Length: 295
Picture 1 (cartoon, rainbow, N blue to C red):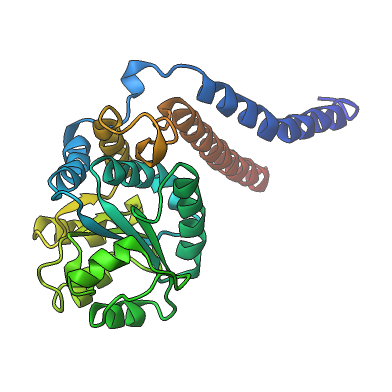
Picture 2: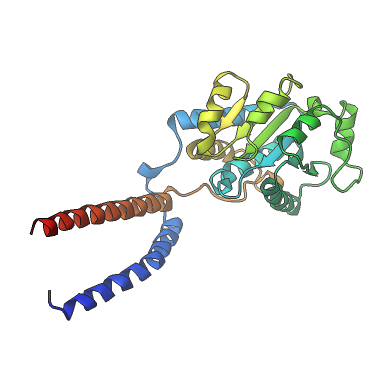
């Protein structure tokens, strides 16, 4: 290669590197809209079983059940479990449950505010949904909540759900199910280790991102969690299992389709290609360096 050709080749590589992120975004956008091939289907197998136990736990709730939802996922990992979380909320409203939502972390509260606003816009009235707000203090606050009565709505107004809760005693033992949507800061571990010894009759189910699975699976195996959607395939399998049974409108409708596996596959392939290119470049660079030293 001549001296004049080297700058031109370098300029071409720089242009390609500049255009690569744009091309990736366009490819993923096209894949999101395109139908996914059947061999890339998410769910099935053990993941399907893991997701279906959550559908079973919700489906076996008594009439007019009271369910407390601890909404404490992380902003970074919530996209992984958002479909499963929204499917669970839709399923709860479909079976006629009355839902109380609480958060113990700032990130969880931010997500809870958005989900509550979405549910209320879809028609979840005060007789079906109550916002217990943000309780500061993290795990210590949850332990305190286990030992006291939940008396007021976040707005201080009388609420039919809380009135029913008061007739049952007002505390966590009055709920038929606790659904914990957890993340790194507040995981279901605290509910199992701190709340269940104080409220042993409370049934706890969980939706968590995949990185928490090694921590959560022993609780599920021991039966301390009655249900766990702890991986992305399990969450998708759960959503698929309830999609045909949830309502077609209102808060009992899942507001989004199941995640498409095609853009996920493209993103993984691109990530692998970048890693291979980087590793190969370092390897060849090392070989060239050794060649120069021997000449």
